[in-house]
Amino acid sequence: MTELESSSPRQDAKELAANLVRFTDSPRSLKICLLLAIFVNRLILALNAPFFPTHAKEVHNLTNSEIGWTFSVFSIANMTLSPIVGFTLRNVGMKKTLVAGLVTEVVGLLAFGSLAFYESDEIYLLVAILTRILLGIGAASTLAPSFAIMANAFPGEVDVMMSLGQAVSGLGYTCGPIFGGVFYLIGGFTLPFIAAAIVTLIAILMALCVIKQDQTLTIEDLTFAQKIAYLNRWQIIFPALCAMCASAAIGGLEVSIGNHLKDDFRLDLGSILEVLSFLAFSYVIAAAVLGPLLAKGILRKDSVMMMGMVGIALAMIFVGPEFPFDTQSALPIFFGGPMIGIGGSMSIVPVVSEQVDQAMKHHSKAREDLNNILSGIFASSLATGA
Image (tube, rainbow, N blue to C red; front, side, top):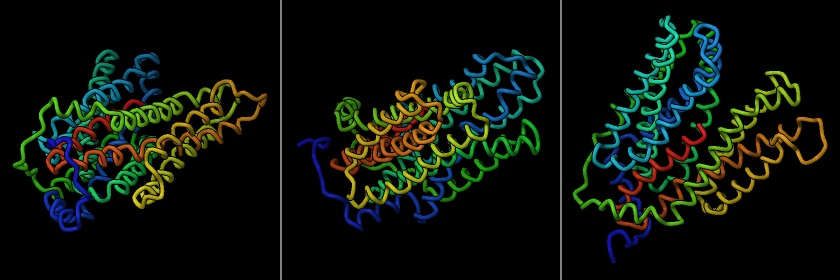
């Protein structure tokens, strides 16, 4: 039986403790550090959403298409680079990649904040697109190693750690526009990016102090062909597809629901924000609850993912442009938003845990190598709806 095909039982407490020491001397601090990195990563995703479109239109005459591209290139860069980061984590190192990603985000934030000082419309657009690409690269280099360290340092707590990670991710995504809007009102265009950069610097300092230098294991690496062969199986592909579809559903709804409610139901901004808030907080709460239930074996991961996908499909009936029943009420949408949030959480939270369970059947070196790759693929799946 080859290394890739061999299986082993769950690690005992002694082995888990020895594995954790490779990453940190303070498990609690490591958890806080990783969750903060994920929070910051999602915070900056929509940080500029409340004010950038207006500023770009009124001050620099950018079109809706050009503004859309400044948002899209972030996700394109993130989605494209994340799998590559996962494949290279073993050679580059998880700590180095994480810190480099956070530093890249600081540079990108400060560069985007400097847009307020450009007078040329063409240079403004070029810098905006380039800095959003830079932020997407930073996001890929932050999320993939964060998930990889979670999976490798806490193999006995993957369910809980991933649920906390997704709860914090949803919270950061929800707080991003609020954070940006508040600091924009206080100090103008540049201040939100300076404030976010300061928070990111805190995450960098924590990572440098808490995470140990990467240690290379002496056991031989898997070949590239073995890695591809391992990934080409339904137990790996199906969870990735679930995360991708759920992320796309949530991201697509957040982009389109505002105009739908405004044009078809004449709802004001406050009501629209309520729908989005219900979706976001239902995702956060469901993610926090799912982890312990999955960890205790109360729920089956594959069943949860399947139910989540079914829930999203049904919820789309409520939030779609043509509700099947004759009604002038927006109540079905208020109901469908949280359904998508809960369904999205059910489809995303078990993904890494399910894939890591598959990797845990292999020897420690193979498992770590595969966890790194799976984390990159998972980060890329999440980027599809960003």
